[in-house]
Every structure is written in structure tokens, then in C-alpha cells.
Image (cartoon, rainbow, N blue to C red; front, side):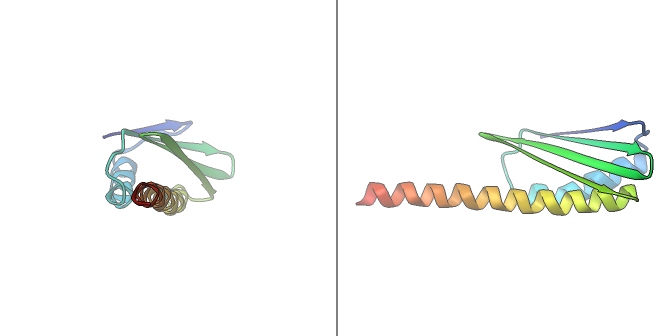
Amino acid sequence: MNLNISGHHLDITPAIREYVETKFARVLRHIDNVIDVQVILSKEPLKQKAEVTLHVPGKDIHAESIDDNLYAAIDLLVDKTDRLVVKHKEKQKNFDNTAAKHLAS
């Protein structure tokens, strides 16, 4: 799994990189087969924006968040991404169970 962190109008310091890596470790516990993760942090006048794209087999999961503080934007992004990953996993689980029911009938 590759974790790519890039910044637009923002330098990615080791502290920011470490913060993003530790926060996304929580998300990656919920899903096993992540191909790669791209995180884009950007600074615009009066707001900080964080975006993520998770590439998993069969789907790309994308989320973004905007806040005044970059660390708060990252926290919101991780929460959104975690919910989307759990939702994707539930859909996969329900799909797999439905197929087994039809085969058994």
C-alpha cells in the first residue's frame, strides 16, 4: 500500500506527514486490500482543504474536507473516509451474502 501525500501552495513538513500517516492508520485497519492512497493538502486564502482518494479493487473512494485549521481538516477527512470505507465494506459483505443465498436456493 502506497501513501502519497502532496501539497498545493503548502510545504509538507515531517510533522504533517507523520500526523496524516498516524490518522490514516485507523482507516486502513478497516479495509485490507487498498492499492494506494493519495492525500492532497492545499492552502487557500482563509481555508485549508484536505482531499483523499483510496484505490481499492473495483472502486475509488474519494472524500474532501475544508476547515480553517489544516489539522482539523485532516481530522474531518479521516472521519469521512472511515465512514465511507465502512459503508463500502458493508456493501461488499451484503453483496457476497446475497449471492450465496441465491446459490443455495
